[in-house]
Image 1 (cartoon, rainbow, N blue to C red):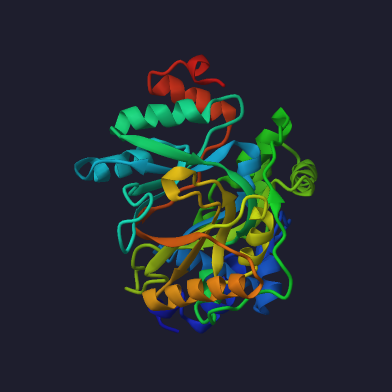
Image 2: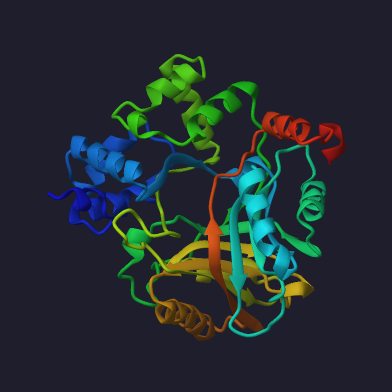
Amino acid sequence: MSATSAISHTDEINARILAISEDRIAGFVREPMREIARACDLPVDLVIERIRAMLQAGTIRRVRQTLMATDLAPGALVAWEVEADRLDAAFDYMFQRDPFSGHVVIRSTDTPIHGSQYKLWTTLKVPHGFSMRKHADSLRDKVGAKRYRLMPARGIFALGVGHTRRKSMEPGAKSDTVAEMHAVRSVKLSELEWRVLMALKRDLTPDEITENLWEPRAREADLPLPVFYEVAESLDGRKVIGRFSTFLEHVKPTATGERVTRFNALFHWAVPAGREIEAGREIGRHHILTHCYWREGGPEFNHVNVMAVAHGTDRDLVRAHKAAIDDHLRGIKMPFSYTNVFWGGRSEIKPSEIAPAAYAEWCRATGLDPESMRD
């Protein structure tokens, strides 16, 4: 085995591991590495060795326990209208200096359309008790944006970034049944639950990737391991835990010069009011989609209300996947009055901070009074 193959996402063994580890370990599990090894039928020591190697090389950009963060902190997709000469600086500020902005993407359209002047797109989560609108207003003033549109998720139909298993997927591939909708709700946590959650969600370092990787996190939370497990499993039962995931570097070339994806596309559909859930369940059943949400685009975006994201290495193939979804909607007599694609360009991704204490601390560090940022 060459040193390159050990860190390449296309290596046969690594591809087997990644097909599981990217998004197939749902909820909280006590021994994630063993679960991955069992599912891909490889020795656990080999799985640990390869994931560590890919993380150290940057092929994998992070390994972490994900959360249903939209239930823990009010969130939205935000489209920002920023003048061209301020766009890069606004991007840098959102990515580097605002811990509550997650995905930061510059998007464009093939032709001028509704909303095409909104070039900067971010996700935003603001902890309970604080105002998302006030935070967005603060960001608008910081970066000199002309205006913005907040688009909170009302329902989630697909959420899972598994690039490896999607590479050879045919347009139109979908599940036999419609997608289930996760209704966005507000979940309040106790101090003990926050302690466990904060220890759970932090990125794992290569040295932490072991068979018993939660033991150090239990110590970090100052809890006996059985208590840590009990709280984590209770949180999982309340459906605020997402999945254990290895996230590939899918924006920039990896150390081997390979690209996991080249294009990411944000799809928009405007379906009749009152049929958003029905349409979202039909769209969300398509396997190519890494995200699918019910969001209201408003007049700025021609009243679109279902949005989804797909990635790929071939632009025409991404278009073919979109066309297959459109054909499916027509085939089931689901009307849509408008649809379009916003293509992703420059992009950075980081987990959004969601803890109320962290928000108050950030306010003080940036010269804001936390009380002034409350709802």
